[in-house]
Picture 1 (cartoon, rainbow, N blue to C red):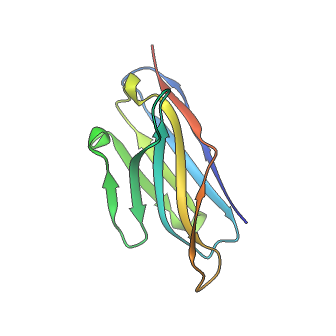
Picture 2: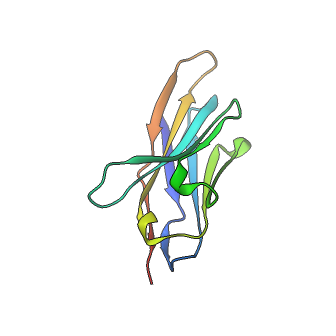
Length: 121
C-alpha cells in the first residue's frame, strides 16, 4: 500500500514562510499528479495548487505569486513553498497524489494526514 506523510507546518508570523513536504512511500511505480489542499476552521477543504507528470501546474488565484509547488521525482516527494503568509492562510494542509503502483496499473488517489500551518503574531 501507499502512504503519504506531510511535514513542515508550524506557527509563523504574518509575512513569514513555510516549506511543506509530502513524502510518498510504499508500492509506487509512478506519481502521476500531486496536489496540495487546505481546510481552514469552519470551511471546506479547497485546492491550493497541483502539478501533473505532464508538466501542468495550477495555482488558485489567492495564492498566485506567494505559493510554489515543486517535486523531487527521484524521492517521490512534493513540496509547497509558502511565502508572505497571511493569517487567512492558516489551515491544515493536505497533499493528495495520484499513483500507479505497478507498470500498467490504474491510478489511485491517496491523501496524507495533514500538517497545520498558522500565520499569527
